[in-house]
Image (tube, rainbow, N blue to C red; front, side, top):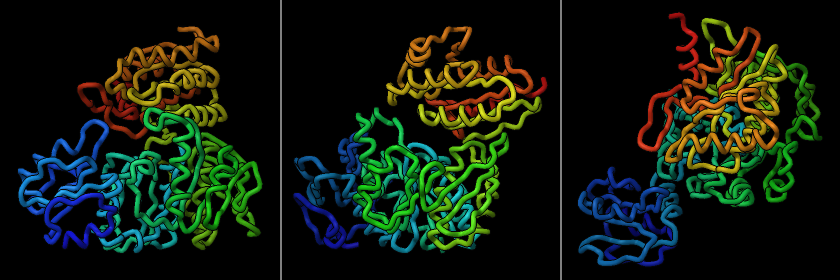
Length: 489
């Protein structure tokens, strides 16, 4: 592709070198550079891509896009300076792959919790309606030929546009994708044309990155305000809904259980194997859904999916069939089948709001004591640690505080921060909780103290298959550990 034509989508601040040249490829990863490629140097969290420019040059790169001052450019190369390398990467990628989102109907789901489950529910409904559906989620990506592991919730812009191109070329009609606050702040979804945007809920999270709750909320808002989707769906039971809706200029569908809404749910029954509810869509006849997913929060996720599907004119019987076909979401209040028939659930809940919701859901169906094993991730929002301790004391009968993904932090110091919240509310060690730095040992302690009829929640890691420490990542699956510990010797 001609360089001058390619960079026409950029706000260029400075050019050093020829523009009349051919670009053979595009990348932001110096390891993928080949002769004649354009390399975009991104200043990341741990590494600055500008440091890898010499490596890219050594591999034969022809063009380098930077956001820092150009000094001593090499003969024969072209350097292009822009205000933001991340914005530039998104614009270049969108152009390079032929604006793929224009050929698809993209449904973007944002919010603190519920994004993953909502993508699965939307995917199931639309597949039942006969459409080709792709999915981009925290658990995995499915571009139309089966799931593949995901590295991050919302891919970097070049990877995302490449995936969208593959789906468009493969005959996919719809894409249900999670849109994280990080991806919005870091321009990963710039240029993506959304048919629909969904807001699930909002609570504290990711303050290690966004710094303030206000900045975190504004990142979510930007999906609706700056990227103006074709339509939007908002959970009006969430306290931040009015703030979101004031910034929406496209047609809006509201959903709720408590408040008046276009898509109104009424919970009929909650049990250990799912919930039944009625949904009123406008003036249509109420539709009964027997959702195999446990918890009131999953009713809200289902209402979000219904809002999208009904707007896309999917018939109510197909909506019902699609929702009732989703028997499980990996790591989302997932019941772990085991040889001793104990009620053990694994969930990804790693925020105060999510932990509270899943514990409340389990409290409603628990026959005996409710146990919880959880920790908090290292190098992440520290303010939520005592809050989660308080929630576990309030809603569980007994807590085992342990490690999550400690990353570069001392696991014991993270546990101490969680304990502070428990102690502030009068919790006593041994009487109300205990601690175990080793996560496997923590699970073993909880399983060993359970009695038949009790319920155990293991929270924080959900579907994850590794545990991340300062110097290594080890294989670790909560579900697998449960099955191993409960297997006969």
